[in-house]
Length: 253
Image 1 (cartoon, rainbow, N blue to C red):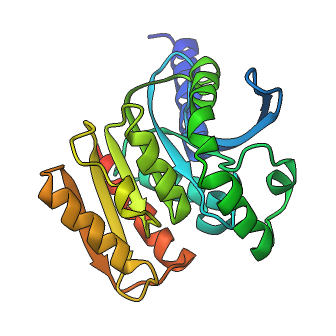
Image 2: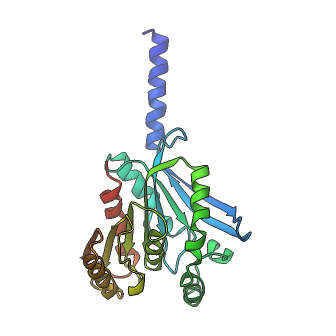
Image 3: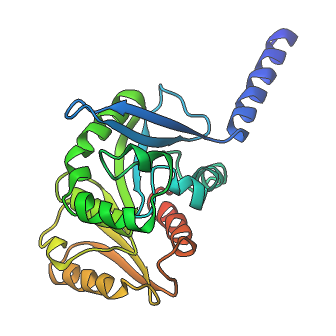
């Protein structure tokens, strides 16, 4: 190998290492729904060394009632967490999609709603399953604009866990993460959906009784799941732990 070729190789390797160390990125996305002409909002994490010629597994990550598409980054620093796990060789590179889970609501996309508006959204939008109906639009957009394939996972916290569970009964997911889920008994599946459910809830969480009910129902119908009680509450301190454990459990090498 000539000196010139050796220098070129070293420079290429240095650029590769610098690219890996630079970390992943968060894209802010807005597109218009073909179904009703309303805007859709999401943020998308792409890993270090992301390249369109490669294919990455995808995780759809849903916020709770008092949140929006920025919540996982603002409250759990999801990009920093994923970067550290990927660069540490603990998990495979993946794409994480974080949509706004309240439809037809531009205001919530730009600032967090008040408690009263959150309750209005829950009663008039989330309960009706509007996001679940329009989820295929989000998935179609992501497939066109990002290089995803293989394993598909979804997880959500609180009312976002409710939406994740509902979606798992309509569309295929390999794994469904339910963090402090706010789920009614009739929403729990009575037969296999093809997914494994990963459930975490703290003993001091005001919705802990519902998580125990989910565990009993899934046991009864022999649906694969992993349920553990923690000591946490219904807050971000718990959800930061849950997402870290979830990634290490299901995005590992």
